[in-house]
Image 1 (tube, one colour):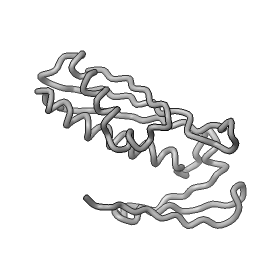
Image 2 (image 1 turned 90 degrees about the horizontal axis):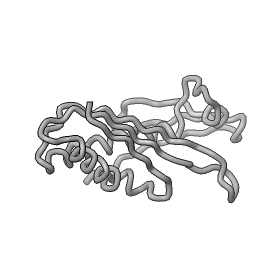
Image 3 (image 1 turned 45 degrees about the vertical axis):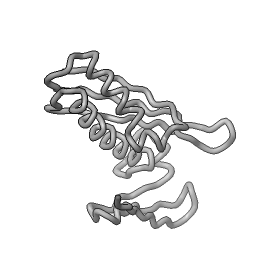
Length: 145
């Protein structure tokens, strides 16, 4: 299996500095990052590690769920997945990810709501990004459209 690479160039201190995250393997883009915008409600046109984790988690979960639905005898027609990744203070100092909320709505033939929920719970536990984030509470809201 391949290794994927991203690169960040950072200039300055935490509060006054900024950086650029480059998606090196795919070469699809370079994105601005800054701590003040990371910690603000309005991202102001910059991304953050939390948003990048949310993107990775939603994509990984969708792939795993499509496989699980097929293994359960269903056909995934469409899956809409969102991941909300929260940053907050760490009681031990600094910051930490305080939770990830996965939400999925699916159009699936061949599975009822209970079968879809079972496949979604298995995807939450089984996708590689979920496995990497075991130190963070991950919740799941899964339903058929």
